[in-house]
Length: 328
Image (cartoon, rainbow, N blue to C red; front, side, top):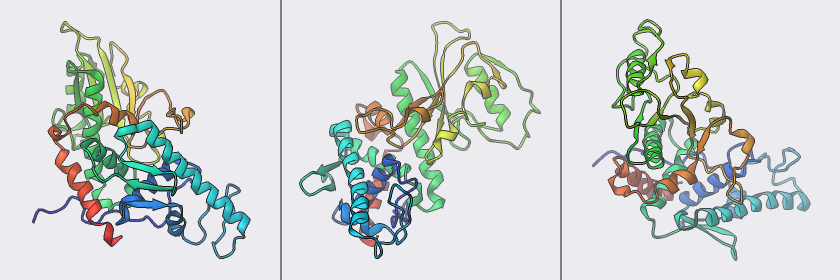
């Protein structure tokens, strides 16, 4: 029997992620709970049940156990969880037919759709990539590598057929191999720009990627330098905001003398949106193009997903997660 990519799936669902004030994280938590339930549905009481004693739910940051709180405080807790469910309802309006769940207003329940399309499965995979704490740590690299490939394909769709897009990340690239110096030298050649570093700048054993996960460019009609370039970082963890500068011009301009300044981008599997579809918190985006779950799904909506090199992995991951729901 073929070994599964994720033999131990959907862990650590006994409490939500922090901070509790981030509705987009709590919505992901509820959607993961929905996947973990054999009935593929979750309501407010299911979320209450998952909180350990001492869960912090009140806006005033007081720690309370369910056995101690009075009716008024319980109502405040209930109201906060209800806000998360209403936030999920807004996702259905934003993603429309691309959303794999639906919100039943009459029963206040989130339900997984029975007939999942390929784009639904892509959404679910991005949901899982944004919920790494639910997986075995040994599987993080597989999830991260797959997300890099998804992000590269999304950038290719954004750029168009004439563009060149490659994964640069260490251990994942087929275009850029060898040690760090060799990879950066090859990158400078591809971009037709001048390499500023010497072969002894980095240790010969250093095979890192210097914070660059994805590179894309649109070649001009001639063979000289000066083109539209995108440098991208992929981040599957909740500290993605701190990683936005990893692939920024200020860092890479010390390594390559660019004729045209590259555009910095950050790819995240999170749905960083408010209830209207705008950015959840605009001020958290720093000098970067943010490509979040909504943009990725929309960019790949028309792409023939079965032709993706990682389509089998996505299907296996989703099927395995749902098959293991009974053991949660």
